[in-house]
Length: 171
Ligand code: FEO
Image (cartoon, rainbow, N blue to C red; front, side, top):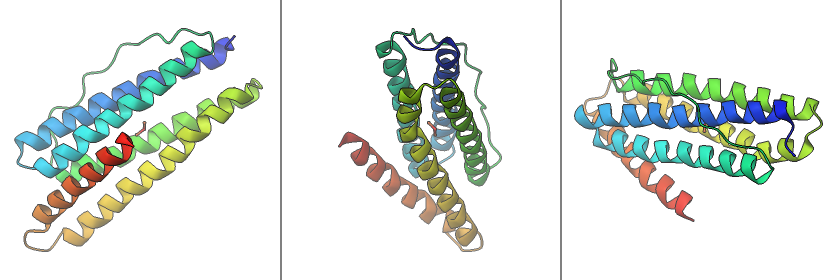
């Protein structure tokens, strides 16, 4: 049986992953109507990844004898100052998610729930990867900043990244 404290913390994380999926979906939608189709594809794919993170947690909680209950979500943002603003907000959000995963790990460890700690290793590594992806994208923004057509090329690169992400998660 899953420890109640750990179960509650896992349910909070489920909510955060679902919220992340919504936030990226809203951002993708804004990118799409703002002419950034590459960024939109990338963020739609990323929104799906967050959903996968949520599903994996739901399955885990239920498999361990808990009950993964879904929580209320916030309405995500509707407009953004620029494409750079979108990606700056994403990095901030991912840093928040990393903190949340680390806290969750700490709770599981303190409760001597080593199975959950082990399960969370995957999320810890995923967060390292995600933060590095978004830091890399922000670096590209800096490089593209003063060049003519820089944003256009960046949008194309994000499109390519979306295709690579989609085929990696299909494997
Ligand atoms: Fe599921 Fe981007 O953290």
